[in-house]
Amino acid sequence: MITISGLNKRYRTAHGPVDALCNIELTVDSGDIFGIIGLSGAGKSTLIRCLNRLEEPDSGSIVVAGRELVGLDRGALREARKKIGMIFQHFNLLDSRTVFDNVAFPLELAGCPKREIGPRVDEILELVGLHGRKQSYPSQLSGGQKQRVGIARALANHPDLLLCDEATSALDPQTTASILDLLADVNRKLGVTIVLITHEMQVIRQICNKVAVLDQGRIVESGSVEQVFNAPRSSTMQLFLTHSAPQQVNGSGI
Amino acid sequence: MQEDLLPMLASGFAETLYMVVLSTLAAVVLGLPLGVLVVLTAPGHLEDSPRLHRALGTIINIARSFPFIILIVLLLPLSRFLVGTTLGATAAVVPLSIAAAPFVGRLIENSLKEVEWGKVEAALAMGASTLQIVVKVLIPEALPSLVLGLTLAIITITGFTATAGAIGAGGLGSLAIRYGYMRYREDVMLATVVLLVIFVQAVQWGGDRLARRIDTKHHRSSKDRI
Image (cartoon, rainbow over all chains, first blue to last red; front, side, top):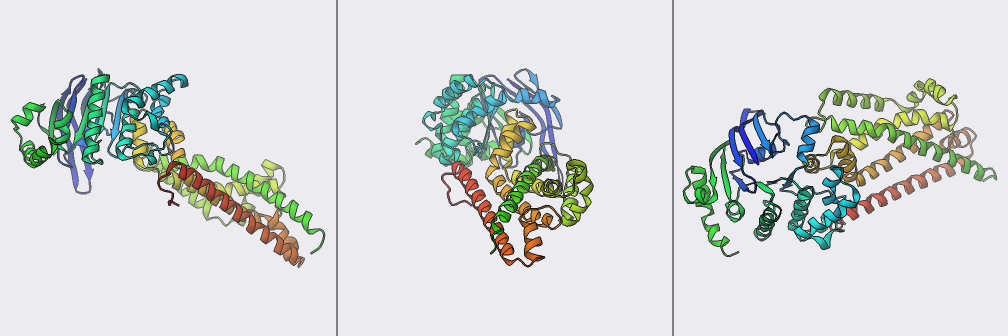
């Protein structure tokens, strides 16, 4: 589904250049829930934002669903983005639109005829459990409900891939768990491939089947979740496992 | 008070209203693209273009630096060309619109700049074009603030019409100067000022109310905003 090779991204800052991403090589298979974990500043956000080119890579190749994204012109990039959904830490819903109209937004952009938009929005709101709230405005919803709208909006146009940029970082643990359940659910039901970034072990543990560990712009470890959790090779992963140990005890109670 | 007062006020107010409405419309037609372009060309925005951004900013600043009365005189040939005369309310709409357009452009720029960047990015991620983002994200999300800006523009333009009245534009400002000031008609002076005050108050009240209505619709949980 995704093949990244030789991806580099460097930022120029007041203190000189910083390598945000360094020679990234990564493969995500169709149907995966692929987690990328790292400390803040590791480059996770830059990496996931390269996958729909919200961030412009300096060099390398990113192939999503058989299409090379690097080098696409603006028009072709817009078309490619219509098949890549994305959800955000702060939801980024439009306050001027109802829940229904927020979810209809990507369909409007894709030029979907009106008579097809209504049924599709209803269907996807049903899936995320918000059918009763379609006439509400985002300000009337809780954080968890807002993220459900975000997920519905991201899935409305039948994407091949769903990108989750710290999607649960602004939510409490219980809401996080229910949003993760929903993501696992849509992965199963719709077969959509999910790539998520997080700094929380719990997120990886709960829904991912594969994980990559990012440290200072480099992937220091990757593989299946069992493999990486049971025999961590990188010091970053060992650090994560040590620090999340008490959470593990709590986590099993949820 | 003399019996000519009421008809005089009525026609003066009609002229003022005519100038304000037409000039506001024209100023928005000119100022909206200007404001949108200034926002879009800002560093890091959708159509990042530092040169154009600086050039537009400079044009706006220069146009706004002119004292309005000087601008009217400078634009007399343009008024004559477009309207066929330099006298009367319609001729005054030309300098009024041109004076107000850069001001309206700045107001629109300030409103659109306040829209959270995350919303723009979300739309980009969905494959929206720049035009779609302007029409479907920036303007609707900034609407309460745009309405307040427009209210301010209408009131400023009303003030401009009084100045234009001093040199032959007609309207309430002209009445106040020609009758109230030059002919010592205190009743005219007082009535025009009172009428202008009431008009400005009404515009502000209406604008505030409309902005709040839009805003509370979008932010029902936070009625204490604004």
